[in-house]
Length: 107
Length: 130
Image (cartoon, rainbow over all chains, first blue to last red; front, side, top):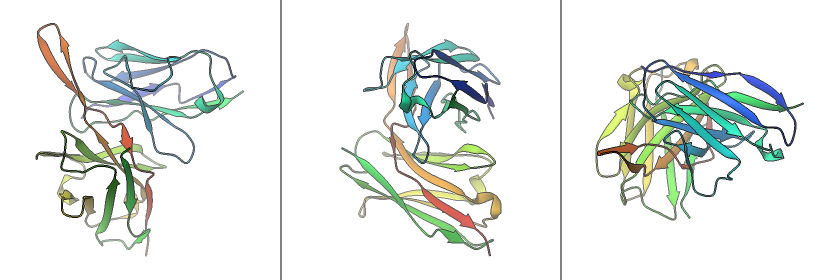
């Protein structure tokens, strides 16, 4: 199975900040990488697929980069609704595993 | 707009079978080329992919659960179901049903198919306890 490791596990940030979250796969997965945002008490919502493709209706302040084993999600100008937990997921091979999550907290 | 809603017993006894249903409004589980997936989330293990079925047939399961999991579609009721047998406290979690059509993208001459979940239910909490 492919292991996904995110860093950091949590981050204290302020509204308007730029944030980058990292995700590393235990083996090469090409660009088969998704990012989700999960607000408290809600289901995850898809932000990015294929490592860098923005899902429809997702704000352009979200962007994804990377291929192979190393990936990043960047959020420019954090908004109040972005204080949530973010997960990466590999879609290269089953089981389609998730990272452990990165929680953004208000500084 | 397609919406998903999970239902089932909130409490299951150890060794019994957990049965959940996902009902769709605004669409059909058997139409379109969709993957329908179950994901669970527990405090100890974060998000865990359980398995998926394809609207036109085929399925994949997490090997760690494969011997205990059944995922099926009842087209007549427009429902997706999950059955997990021989449950233990480790199966306590919020269970989500989710779906995604995926996207085919060319990279040079190679056509790659990207799987993701862009439709989610709100989740249902299941506790395994005697």
